[in-house]
Length: 306
Image 1: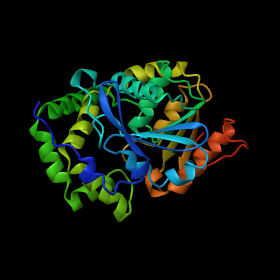
Image 2: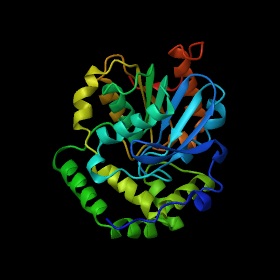
Image 3: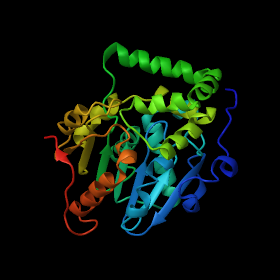
């Protein structure tokens, strides 16, 4: 495959959020960009497809007062190396993140995953790679596309990823301001100019676009859904009322598969709810940490879906 221009830390990361907490770690055959800060029980934050560590930027100051945060760029995203094609699958991604945690000597007490990051978190738990006391899924992309549509989507993603010119074209197209704003708007979210600027920077990089396409190309949630009923770790499923990327009803459907799982609905926000209203997400994470006995007193947040 033709080499794809990477984001350069010295150039593109000069003003990256929480740059002082960043380091580069070699694990699972990849060079990872990881941010670590805070004190307390270990909290792993996993972003979704097409995002990066930047998506947690407004949560870090508050959460770091209660948790030791571990925030990686997932493989192929932002400043982390891409996985080879034969490892581009949900289990492959989960194994890679688990390998990173081993090198870091981190056993997360709580994992928060956004969108596809939630699927990675749950796959790691189900495979026994991590044993957290709880998992929070933020607009988790946990249900497969049904029938022929899902097969066509997967096939198209594979074809697009395999074509070295597609990420260049996609990056060139999405790098324009109006195009990036349209991509974000299509998720049901509305971001600040600062938030949009980070996505514009990412979408201009063919390596990042290729990483997102590769993640989609290898994504198959059938096995995850088959295995979810044997999940024994407490699971909180957070949905967003205006999410146009993952239907809010998915949280209810997944909750029915997992004994003891709970579903909450955030009103008036879309797929990037944690970037739109970070304080609301901070509150629910802290409340869940208290409920699990990680932080002390019990707390609650959100409106119950069920």
